[in-house]
Image 1 (cartoon, rainbow, N blue to C red):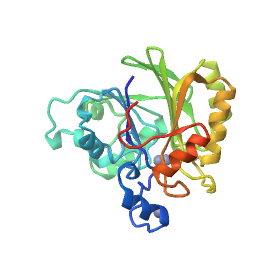
Image 2 (cartoon, protein in one colour; image 1 turned 90 degrees about the vertical axis):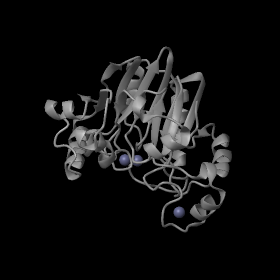
Image 3 (tube, rainbow, N blue to C red; image 1 turned 180 degrees about the vertical axis):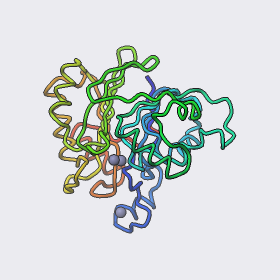
Image 4 (cartoon, rainbow, N blue to C red; image 1 turned 60 degrees about the vertical axis):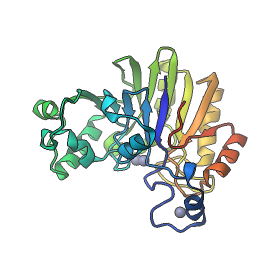
Length: 282
Ligand SMILES: [Zn+2]
Ligand SMILES: [Zn+2]
Ligand SMILES: [Zn+2]
């Protein structure tokens, strides 16, 4: 399995557009791994997690074609994870040619919100309508937490999170052959039913990618801070959910309490994890 981080920032990007805090100013000077686009992940060439607003910029920088994507797992429809106007360019009005059908997986509440956002942009009315799906060349699959399903060569399970209950936001584990990755953003403290689900489904993760929106001193709702992140990976190790050579990566990083990449890497090393950056390939 080849995993490519297309973006590793929270909704704010990193540095934050108008912010002149010490961290953002430093990031502007160092550039490189300190320029983070909004979070999205590509698995091999054909499975995308989140149709985020920065995926095309990432694809230009990394020489990747998004046209190869056949499967999309949508965690939730927040605008740092779903860009309706960009997605709407799948419609014939944009003279799009010869596009492959895309299998789109998301919770029903997320699909409804995505439809509302597409309506707002005048691109489409209802993703659940088979006629609209035909027009957008989509197979839409509403899924629920704790549901397991197959998408092409991948075995996937969805897990609940309390990040935004109004849109039933989901986390995913993806298995190809014997290799499993867990994509855990956006999330607050992972709910017990999800921990139970990991065990019931006998998950052992080779790679864990987890929400690290805030630094250790910041308490932000709906996301994890660095302390909570460390507690989560410790629990994964204690409960034998992480493979022996399993690795853990922080993503969805904001400027609030997260220092520039080189400093965050040093901090993370002390706590037994790695920090993802845009363009990182595993
Ligand atoms: Zn987000
Ligand atoms: Zn800042
Ligand atoms: Zn979110």
